[in-house]
Image 1 (spheres, rainbow, N blue to C red):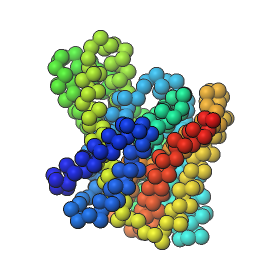
Image 2 (cartoon, one colour; image 1 turned 45 degrees about the horizontal axis):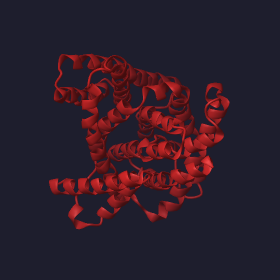
Image 3 (spheres, helix red, strand yellow; image 1 turned 135 degrees about the horizontal axis):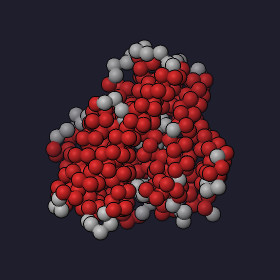
Length: 395
């Protein structure tokens, strides 16, 4: 990507974020993605490429750290049952249920193996809170719905990646499925990632005492966000969950023991600039990249898959919120519907798609095309529709 292209992309992002600052309920990600789709047809932007390495190892760690660091630990504790169940057991049930109905429905449109149907489901299960949480917080008097959607997303990115990687290995024929081996691998990757993140988050919260220069404290947070992600991946555990756990731990420790210092202030100023910068680039590039995978002959099936993903997620969220006593007391069925609709697909889904594309696995054209269209439909329909739905259910 040429420097001039990057500058223009950042200018576009600045304009869109400025408009959103004035309207308060402006859905930035779908607008950015839509503009990115238009840019694909402009010769000046020819040759732009979004690779899985760029998205997964350069952009994602920073976005994960920012989301975790800024997320309220109090909100995590208050909604821990909902967040943990939806992002673990709920996500697994969603993959299995959605994969099953996609497999049964696919026979009306195309031939898909059960593993390919599960791959599509795994790609569509991670949620991206960027699109909707600020809108939910501004649309509702109760911030709980936005907190659950955001907290669930922080954890389910790591969960979905583990499930996707296992299914991809099965699809490639490199291993057969065993429930016990899958659960063992999942627990190792997930718990290992969370543990190393907590440890390093605690260490960094102490290390900042060695300097009172704000610039060096920011440098240390950058090293942690990227270094921890890469370290965890090198040991075969979840870099996603490690970075999330570290961000949460750092935030909690700052609030607990460093209230009189200005560590949070210096980090906030830096990462508050990084976040919109990266979000502008990533959603513009998602829209640009998606154009290459859009095939109108697949649109009907992809639309069905999108609707099925909404239905299955709604069923899982309702069953979880209305059957588990600690959750039933705090979440109504209306709020469950908003949590379901707020599960917009975004960055992590595209990461998984690009990993699938780079895997050189044959016969994945249908999976790529259907999933990309479904992600875009989710990004546009759910991001734009969540504000009027919140107002409707509130009345």
